Length: 156
Image (cartoon, rainbow, N blue to C red; front, side):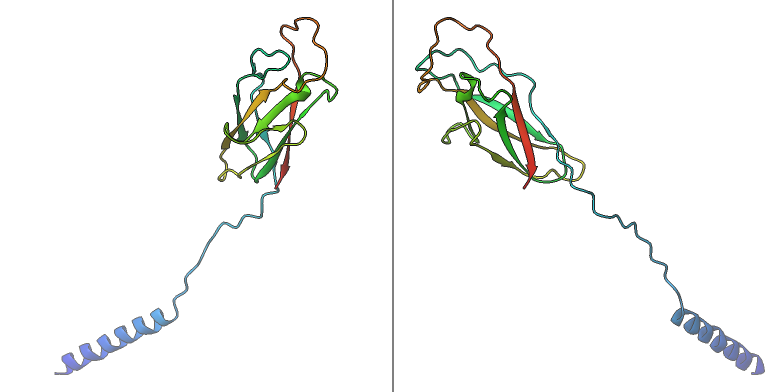
């Protein structure tokens, strides 16, 4: 009988100590906290596009221009001629989609969403050379006529 009482007493002490220890357990919590990444604006466009053949009072076919937002914020992209006095290529027109209304270079821009973390957001626009309202003179063929277009990207 004493043995049973002793076992019961020791069992109660053991169970009591578990309750006391469990009531005072400590949980360590760990997390990685990152500061805000500074805005990074970066865009990639093709190096070269052939828009086709044109003559006065005609326009070229619409050409798709792919854009990649490689930064980390949503951007507004605006094309402009490097040589703003180019009488031919100042007649480049842009639209977000082929069926949209076209606006002249220098007065058109489009929004491109921000990419997911570490990714690239791809989008596209359409461009054409429209000489239907060109009032200059084209007295000779200009095979291989080129112009540089700068794509200005700013944060939205």
